[in-house]
Length: 139
Image (cartoon, rainbow, N blue to C red; front, side, top):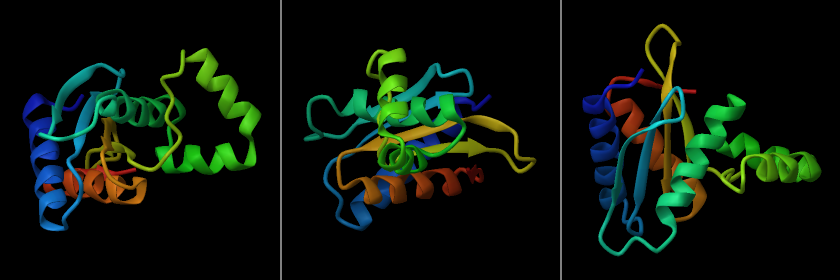
């Protein structure tokens, strides 16, 4: 499982990346491999609902074993399937880039990070920056 210290590093580095490249205020959520909240930060000015969106991106990635970007691609190809998953998970699935699986060096799944606040592609960049800064691997 991802430790609190690792989660804090992921969040801090994702926030730093966001500030360095001029992203809008971010909300970052880190879940462990069981989908439990480990840590979350919402930057000043990050919009209402961003914690739920970030958590939905991370939770969807964990539940399906792929990034939330891949879930978005599935939604384009199989909208009925993704809609059914959303119903099954009570609307907690967010199929848009920004939810990334976190693995250790051996490939073991530790959890996932979800980022929300800017364009989804930029959210995903921040998530990846956080993961790499913690010495972990995306995917």
